[in-house]
Image 1 (cartoon, rainbow, N blue to C red):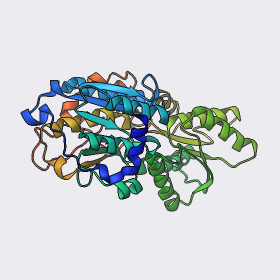
Image 2 (tube, helix red, strand yellow):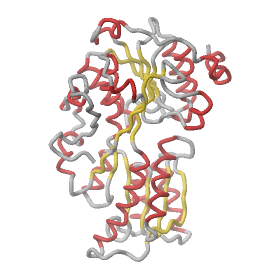
Image 3 (tube, rainbow, N blue to C red):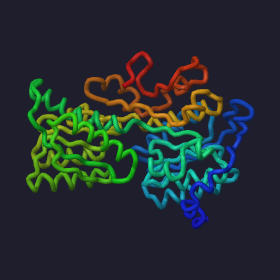
Image 4 (tube, rainbow, N blue to C red):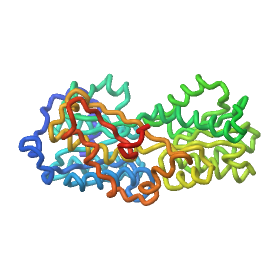
Amino acid sequence: MHRLFWALLGVGLLCVVAAPLKTNAQQNGDQSDHIRVAFINPGYGDRGFWKDVRDTMQAAADQFGYELTVFDSDRDWKMMVESAEQVFAMQPPPDYIIAVNEHQQGTRIVLEAEKRGIPVIMLLNDLTQEQKYTYGTPRKDIKNWILTLTPDNERAGYDIAQSLIDGARLAQGDAMPQTLCLLSIAGDRNTPASLQRLKGLDHALSRYPVLREQRRIVANWSYDEAFRQTEAWIKRGGCIDAVWAANDNIALGAIAALKEAGRVPGKDVFVGGLNWSTDGLDAVTDGEMTLTHGGHFFAGAWVMVLLHDYVNGVEFLKDHPEITFRMEAVTRENMADFNDILFTRDWDKVDFSRFSLVNAPVGAEYRFGLLSDDKEHN
C-alpha cells in the first residue's frame, strides 16, 4: 500500500479520469446523518493551531449532523502519509476527504482520491501554482477535487508589517518614525501559507521604506527556534526595532529573547504575529504585540459550511470551486469584540448555519468571519 501510494506522484494526470462519487446525500437531498468525512490533519490534535482547526471543524460537523473522523499527523510529513493511507483503507470509504497541502504533500492525496472516486476538499494550504500546472485544477481537470478553501495569507502578511509602523508611531506620540530596523521571521520555506505571508511582507516593504529589513530567517513555526535566532541576532549587535513574525509562536519566542536582552516590546521594539492563540491574545492585551492576525483556524468550520452547501446544491459553488476568505486582525482596540469566544474557546456558541448560502438570496456570497453580521468583516 505504501509503495502504491507514493507511486501515484509519477502517474500524474493519468489518474484524473474517474467520475465523481455520488453520495447518498447528493442523490437524496440533505441526508446529513449519512455523510462521513475524513480529515487528514497535518498537525497535533491536542494542542496549538491545528487543534483549533480540528475543534471548530468538529463543532460545525456536529451542528450539520456529519460524522467526522480525524487523523492527526503531528506536523510530520511521514505521519501525513500514514494518515492518508489510513483514510484510504477505511471501510466503507469516507464520503468526503478534507486534506491540506502541508509540506506540499497534497498532490498525492488529491490524485489517490481521484483514482478512488472520493471527493476531496483542500483546506488552508492549496496546491501551489506549479503543482496545478502539472496536475490540474479543481473540477476542470481533477473532477473529484471539488472545492478549495484558503485564507488571504498575503493580506495578513501585509497587515502585520503595517501594524509595526502603526505601533511605533503611536509609541512616539503619533510621530512617524524615520526608520525601523526589521527582523523578519518566516514559518518555513515550502508551505504555501508561509510563502504567501512573505509575499504580503514584500509588498509592505516596497510600499513603506520606513521598514528596513535587516535579515530574513526561518523558524519552522517554532517558539524555541525563534527565541534562539532572535537572541543570536541581538548578541551579534544586529539592529532591531521591529519583528515581523509568521505566527504567534514565532512572535512570542522573539519577545522572550528581546525581554531577556532588556528590550521592552510595545515600547522600544514592536512585534506582530498571527494565529489568534490564547498566548498571542494575552500579549496583545498586555501591549507586547501590535496584533495577532488570524481567524483562519475557523476554516475548519467554514469548510463544513461549504460541504453542507455543496451537498445541498448551492449554485455559487458550481462556478466558484476555489474560495478565499479574509482573516481578521485582533488588536487592543477591537479585543472586546472577540473576547467571549476566543478566550473560552467554546466554539459551540457560534451558529455556523448562519454562514451558509442554502437559503440565501441569489447572488449572495460567503462572508466568513467571527464578527457578528452587524459588525464590519475585515
